[in-house]
Image (cartoon, rainbow, N blue to C red; front, top):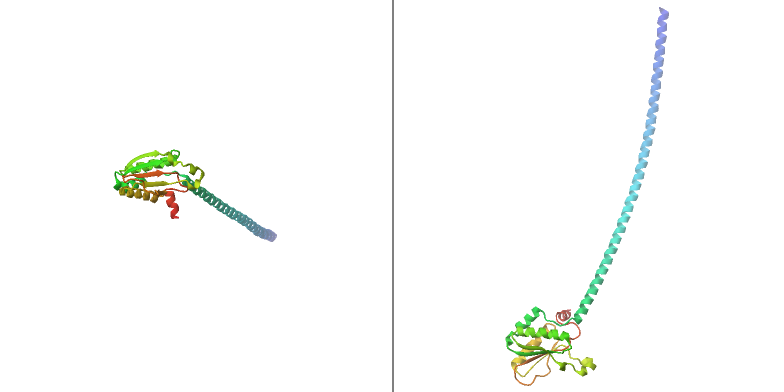
Length: 248
């Protein structure tokens, strides 16, 4: 019986020894895996940090590149705006130059409003006889003469014409261009009423920007009569264009 008991004790001791060894082995594995986990975690953290740094650097480069592109686009936009402005100014300058050129050669005409304005001012001379003439070679003068005739008729004047008159062509003027008569010459007889009507007509034309002159001397006789002679167009702007130029 004693030997059997001792044998059981030995078995128990062996089992306890194996158990202790298992515990030690388990602790060793636990330390091993724990250390490996720590090392792996550190490496992962380092890798994540490196990846984040690379991502941050890459993003910084992308941001700088985007800023550079934006600045370049801004500079290009400014240059385009500058070129467009210069082009617009050039177009405006050419437009103004063309307008000025057109004003210098534009035919003399009376607009509807101008005709109504003149006729309302001259209607107090209703019944006043008037002759209107022009050079048969001057188409521009003929057009202006037609406007004057229609305006005076609207005022109630007894307007004849316009009539082409050959005496406008002076051989001397073909040589001495400085003495060529231009504009509108308004004349009258010795009749007082005709003198007043002639003066009023001349003033109206001048106030509308047309070159108009009083005839150097009255026509003979005291019969009521006003004469309007439409000569060649003067150089430079006429009408509204002339008035605008005088305001500057």
